[in-house]
Image (cartoon, rainbow, N blue to C red; front, side):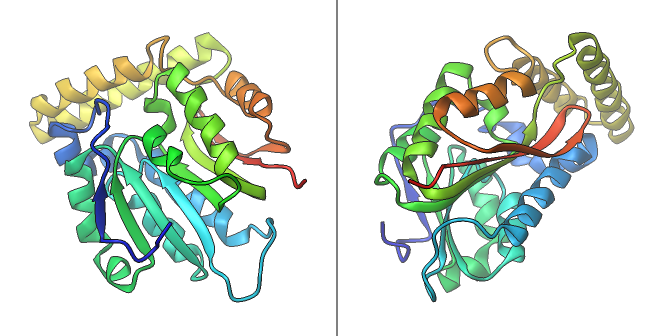
Amino acid sequence: MDTKAPETERNTAVADSPFNGLIGEEYAMLRLICPPAAEMSRQVGDFLKRWQGGIRHSGVPLRVLEIGCGTGITTLALLSARDDQVITAVDIAPAMLAQARQQLAPWLKEGRVRLVESDALSFLAQWGDDSVDVVASGYAFHNFQQSYRREVLAEVFRVLKPGGVFVNGDRYALDDTLQHLQVIQDEVRHFFATFIKLGRLDLLEQWIVHLFSDESPDHVMPLGSALQSYHEAGFSPVSVHERCRNNALVSAEKPCQ
């Protein structure tokens, strides 16, 4: 694929996004109500900075795909990590991509980043087998329904070169359901305290509804079952690098042939 394509491309075969409305337009609020989200983005960048895997050729930049770039928080962490990469980042929500274009303007101009408006599965289908070095994501995969997530994971495995890596900083539910419930209750209390103080009950409603979606049986992503799904897709090794309550940084490598 041509890394010199226009700054933002669009694939019209997209699905619904929870971030097409108010919470997408004011996504910066996530830093207040869920500080671990920004920390997970930072961790993804730190991982890439120290990653030495893959089959490299001198002078050839890393080809990186980012799934669910949102407003560009994780993209910025990736760009800060190293300068030997070209990133193609995808998101389904126009409101989020509009903010990403502003945050990433210098790198878009340089051709180091390309933004694509699409759902993840349609986007990945456009890439050839064994064609990219890294697939990265921050706080996006937990938004996918489980069946869709499995399909995306299979496509991630397909497009990665042997020796390539998938790195994801995300909400991974605790396998102990009682402990996980207590974490979610704490999150809800924090949502209420933050938005009542700000006088933003409109956003409180939106984020509570979104949280119910995240925690629904079709979406919730327990760490244990997620790691198993990575192994079943063919990744090895699969590693947990950081774990903080219901957040984790996980990497999964495509074995060298």
